[in-house]
Length: 245
Image 1 (cartoon, rainbow, N blue to C red):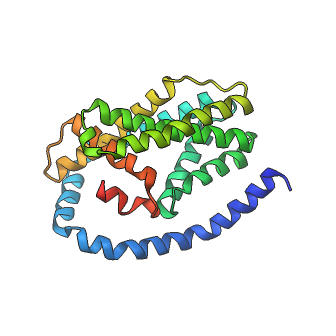
Image 2: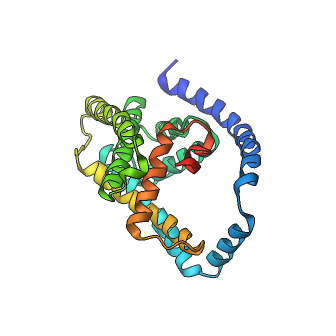
């Protein structure tokens, strides 16, 4: 059986498991959420967001732009991958990471590209490994740039070590299996950092709705620390790891 055939069968199994995994993850998370969520504070924040449609639309637009940046970088790194296909695969992996443990949504990202395009499994996998590792390197760089390494403590060094090997390995692997790949040692992590800065606008505005005045630098630092912690996440959606960070 070909690699595509194996991948197709695996994808079908994952599709059948996704609804069940989502229900189980929600059932496991609900008791914890009920015990820690301040319903009145959450309601106040929601009312503030609804009362400010302009800022709400703006931060959602910036969030969408972050994924557009990631899709554009992936297209540049992997010739033959269309922007729409890259954007769709990113959203498939995002959904998968919220219902599957151990960040298994990344498997769906690769599956989506291989099934929808003529790109082979090795190139799709290598580019995904390299880009995800670049994401983590960018997060550590943002934490350091913001002067907030104390927030991460020893986590930052551990995450940096965990990200460097797959970043270099993924880049070398991609260059071997996709000779036309356009790789930039600094360009890819820089673009990843730009995407995370765009995403931090959501946290910045949400904090303001909740009554916390964060600076832009603080919002970027908190976003970077919490997302970097997801590198070691086990539960679906990083439940527990995210809140602790």
